[in-house]
Length: 232
Image 1 (tube, rainbow, N blue to C red):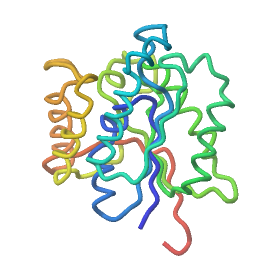
Image 2 (image 1 turned 180 degrees about the vertical axis):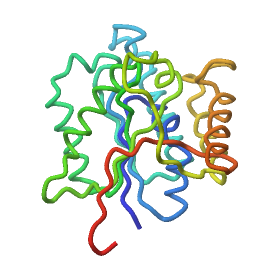
Image 3 (image 1 turned 60 degrees about the vertical axis):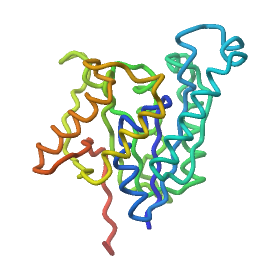
């Protein structure tokens, strides 16, 4: 059994980025823990108090827990860094939260955002995870993987940031339906086809990534680091 940690910016990023892989880990008996650092709503409205009163924040949290249950993850931690404003937070403050999660779950595998995404929160979290998972004595993380998030990763123009060029693929032919089901829990966050963040687009991408490696469906990642111990 493996301990797996998914560190995402906003509710739905965890499913868009690696939802079918989460389900595959869970079906294999691995313990999957999800950490979502930003509340994912208030960039739409500066009045956090009104949003809390109207229940939009709690509705998004309910969707996150529903998605977690559909995918079979063991735990979900929701934090409240400000949506699309994580560049206003000191880097160290984000790192400390990530380090606390690493100490709590002692994962061997960590999935998080790609460094070149359009969304600023994705980039700041990527940087914090890199810092927190630095390979020093006692570090449990031996596999570090970066996922793509539709309507963010592919929207970055060539030359503006590192391109998403995957070199790690997971065959998710047996769990793609669970990813689509989990995204249905986030129906308020999803968009109509042909938007990149539509269920149709998510399936098309999974089928294309599968075709990249000769299977029905896949999720693609960039390998950030792989440490193989002497007894493997």
